[in-house]
Length: 464
Image (cartoon, rainbow, N blue to C red; front, side, top):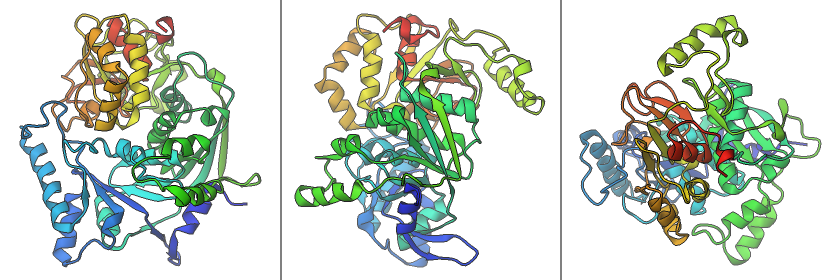
């Protein structure tokens, strides 16, 4: 019996290239302002239009400021990219959720929340974290700019079929342990190259019990293990999340769709190229100490001692510690923090703000802490207000900003200054990722909130 990955992939193969890649049909192409300009230029140079424009949705997110979006963007590079997207989508007649459009936000947050990403689809975007959309039961992956042009022109892509991997996480998660901790735990065990060449199906009781927001977080971080993408088989949690979304099927079409979606699962005797099982009870709230997402430990743990690092990995390990100003064997608890960032396509959803607020309620932002709380979309921002979370957070000394990628990456105004430490709910902690010289510690919204109210790295379980 085939794996679910095989079922979706094979159903979208238009033709197989002998000794080469598959020609794969793409159901949905997302475009943002950073990786699309050259693709539009390519179409223009060849005098062709988008083959199926109704399958393409565009929005700016990387360069959008998270305050005063009503005013022109002050940074000239950011403004040029956002304006170029506006001009291109107008010329080519594409759907555009521009800045300040109530449908706008981070593309990987908006797609699922509007029902544009659906089970069984193939989904691509010129962005590595496209794997996020796999949470709805889709095969979703990032592509390069030349491939964006290919999809625009033909609604197909030439792609070698990856191998399949299933990661099963069984048991239950403990108090204060979130999907972000699950992902950081997997990376700490598998490393950032442990899933290279594979498409990962997440399964097991822990995954089944995750909310859709949790699954979106888990799939978002698949790429950080080296995987081509990651996904979760659709189930009742998926259907409940999608029902009533603006672009989800309705009426009889909904019933037919759900009947089909229920067939989207790996067979009992499906054979994966690799299968790994983890015990969910082992996972604790996590935090990173180094300069790649796999350099993580439990928040109550220590930076690994040198004898735990292989000889060939020691130079890069020590280089990372020099950059972070950490030392082997140091405890993470109590380390001072300068900035806290809640947001990104990893943790910018309503559940993440509820988690942050659960710790902030009745407490106050620690002196000296600068906190950026950035919703992943205008829809999330509206829901924050509807649930009164904005009042809870404001009373605790926090401000809710406007949607955008924000401090996930240094492409907008939200940059962490050199030498400063930021506990961040984003997905990458490379040198300079959040600003030249910035030092990033990846963590869950609960760990971020605990740092925000104490000023130091703190076990959130003590505050829950």
